[in-house]
Amino acid sequence: MTTVLITGASAGLGAAFARGFAAKRCDLVLVARDKERLAAVAAALGREFGVHAEVLPADLLDPDELRTVERRLADPERPVDVLVNNAGFGLPAPFPYSPVEDEERMLDLLVKVPLRLTHAVVPGLRERGRGAVLNVSSVAGLLPTGTYGAAKAWITAFSESLRVDLAPYGVRVLAVVPGFTRTEFQQRAGMDVSALRDSVWLEPDAVVDRALKDLALRRPVSITGWRYKAYATAVRHLPRTLVAGRMARKRRPPQER
Image (tube, rainbow, N blue to C red; front, side, top):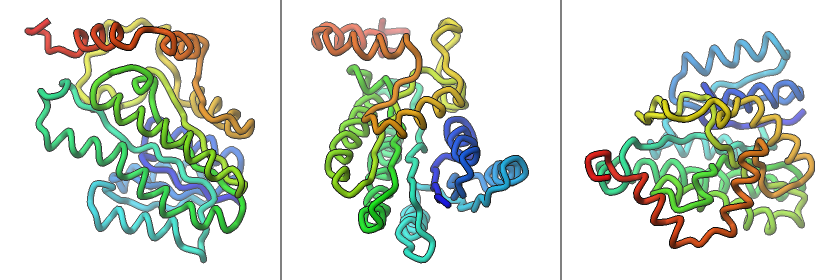
């Protein structure tokens, strides 16, 4: 029986990953700040799939609570076979219009936390010669899209590098690179996405389904939908200075555009 630890598991992509792995009869360790929502997700998964879902409430930006999750990942008596680094948030205003403290918190959650949790789980995976790490990135990391995109670019590059390093030990690493997905992310970040067409939106379960297929195929990156796959291909050939200028204009506050 495989055990999967998922951060940000109370809603959105995290909850979808929990459903996806539960459908494969994996046991789960669900991590998020909201204990009640986690317990509800765990109970629902237990009823539907008959799996054990451990609830581990933690604010990953709290050093002590982060260490609690690290210890759970490194526990040889209760090995974790798959880590899904999914927790994250965005900011409504571009740099430097957001408070620097908020920028630091976002950077810590998107970069420092996955780095530390991966560092905690990898020794056990390598010793057992199996397992996987899935890091949720974003298509925002494919272009110069502010500090959020920069952090997501880091997680994609980190995943691709780690994949090469761990391949000799039988450990898989996948960067999951979704586009706009119907979750609470945009609402929590205070983003106005009313102008986006319905055709650009992805469903969380579709992102997870594609990711699990790509993990089985040992691919380095998972992108859902032909639109975003075409986008990812196109941006590799666009002049970076042109793209950076266009993206910068989009990031300016309305009164400065």
